[in-house]
Length: 315
Image (cartoon, rainbow, N blue to C red):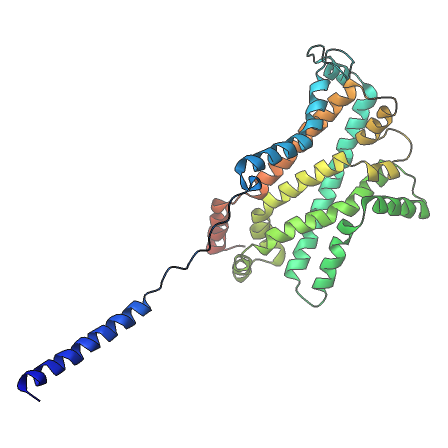
């Protein structure tokens, strides 16, 4: 082996080593995944088709409601053609003593149902969340059972219960029947909010000397007010609009507004009924929207105030 060959041999080995390192480095670099060939887009993939479907669904949902509102403003009693716009049917509604009595009764029933169900439903949710034991899960199942039961079955069951115990059907029985399905709704809403509360706030209040009732009144309830108001508005609307339970449990006398409207429809739909339906729809939609806004509200200032309260001590 010549001197030149002895010099070139290490250089060759060094070059081979560099090539090996470069190949390993290239293999270590992640390669972008190979995307499959895109299939040709069909007409169902076009946004135009989706817009058509969306428009059809919206028209299907809101066309009946729009017709009720429009014909409640019709100048004549015709329900086939518009002869101009007028508020005469709303004015006539304000002078209908029978409908006003039914409206007043429905508001009273809804208010009583809301107050009782919110109080009992909130206590139910607190018991399900704070009282963790082996009976909690069965109790949760039993609590939501009225929601799974068909409303007509609940109404017939309430009717049989009141008749069996000799209770005369009246607005009181309607209120009691509404409360049976209203409490589970409130319980579910309040439970979802209570689960999201920080339990350390309540523990801190107790460590500072607050009783269980004091911690509930000064710490827990202030944080639950949005959910309490939201659930109350929802129950008020549901009780105000309810027909099935009210129809089976009302008895003689002045009927609730939905039952009164049903009795009027037997003689034909009039613009006055459309006016009543429009007012009920405005009340219901407004209450539900307000309830959704309140339920989604977050109160950082209120939580900071509670933290300050627990930090400064509670008597």
